[in-house]
Image 1 (cartoon, rainbow, N blue to C red):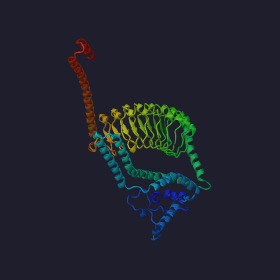
Image 2: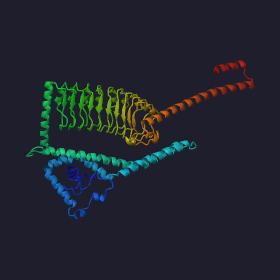
Image 3: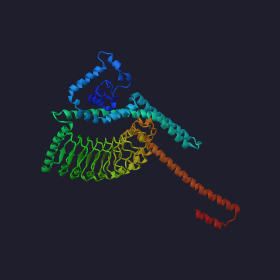
Image 4: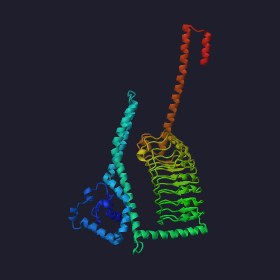
Amino acid sequence: MDPNPKTYPILSYTMNLLPSLGKKHPSYSDFDDIDIEQQAGQSNSSASPSKTAAAGTGGSKLESSINREVELMEVMPHLKDPEVLSAMTSAVSDVSQTRSILKALGERPDHESVDSAKSKISEIESNLYDQIQEIEADSRLPNAVELEREMGIEAEKEKKIYEAVIKSDEMHESYETLLKNAEERLLKIYRLASSRDRKGKGVAEEERMVDKEMNEEVVRILQEGLSKGIERVVLCDRELRYLPEEFGKIRGLVSLDLSTNQLQVIPDSISGLEKLEELNLSSNILESLPDSIGLLVNLKYLNVSTNELKTFPGSIIRCRSLVELDASYNQLTYLPTKIGELVNLQKLLVGFNKIRSLPSSICEMKSLRHLDAHFNELHGLPHTIGFLTSLEILNVSSNFSDFRELPVTFGELMNLKEVDISNNQISALPDTFGRLDSLTKLNLDQNPLFIPPAEIVKQGVDAVKEFMAKRWVDILLEEERKSMEAHTQAQKGWLTRSTSWLTGYLVGGEKSPKAQVHYLDQDL
């Protein structure tokens, strides 16, 4: 669970110095041969050898770890610097917190356990469906609804233990990525510390010098932009920490690329770039965008992916020229309520966020062709999704236990070509699914589907469409039959009432024939 010093030497060294571990001196002895990527089945005893075992061999693990530490210090002498260590330990706080959580959860389950858990969940859901079908078929049960509810509750309880195994595996998987990113962060910090002569210079001073050099380049570009009226600026991968306010004065700028830096904020003065059409802010550490971004009325392409955005400013809806918006890999929990006012948007990418629902206004995007909302927490799609008549590609996969059904209006998406709804909890496709004539690519994997059945799904997209189309026709025919039957019953009821009256008249003779005929005329 701790990072292997062979794979992540700087991270392992740094984390061993954290106060939470209660150690005063760096040592690899507890981390040796422990790797988050170790193969399933490796014993805990081999992962955490005792000191006795370590001391019992000539080339002991303790000696090996000490030697490795010495080698690391020789290669990276600045690791002894208190300021460097302070910066590094701060940089890995997220790893430390995640590791604490994972230690509480225990070791990562092996692949066999994960596959078994998934199989058990499918089995529980299949059994539940069969039981519910039996209850609904038995008309003698007066409390069928209550029975179904209780069975559903029991099934959910039974599934929880298996779902916990799957979630644990997913968390460990994410932890692997976190370790890789942390090692890269620490390497950058070290390179910064060792990039020049450190005599009399602290880490903070070095960072200021780096910022100064970078800003000199930015100023040069600014001056060039103001004097020559340049239209395109590329400042990607420069470790920029901030953007000068003066940038907003390059009025003729059409394209600005600030990707892969360390920007935390974008100045309000960006609103001065009134001709800007392309803005790439991806791979920074932005937590928000300025409200002034709504003044970029000519903006067509906006990429803010791989940041730390939690919300979008409401003013984004004023960017009516937007054609493509990429906000994937952020911390978004919702989209602006009126985002549908971006009527020219053709591509919306919001995958890998924490969005629980899409606003209903999204269905007003008549130009939208590509919608990607996979790996979120979606509970479903808006009921009016059928209004997106231009939609060609839809990916709502990997919303896992939250996503359970598609709305019946799904069949109105007549131009839909590619659909990915894998890794959800969808048990049945909507009856209108067979109307998707343009559909050529379909992924239904990892869903507890029973409509259509598994043997149909295995045959591919055409078989699924054919099955659902036939099912839809059968439903329409059944509804028409019921309607005609109801109409016939109504006619029979009228004739029965009329016959009864005539019989009464002939037998009783209480009313005059003239009066009775008048009554029939009224009925007719």
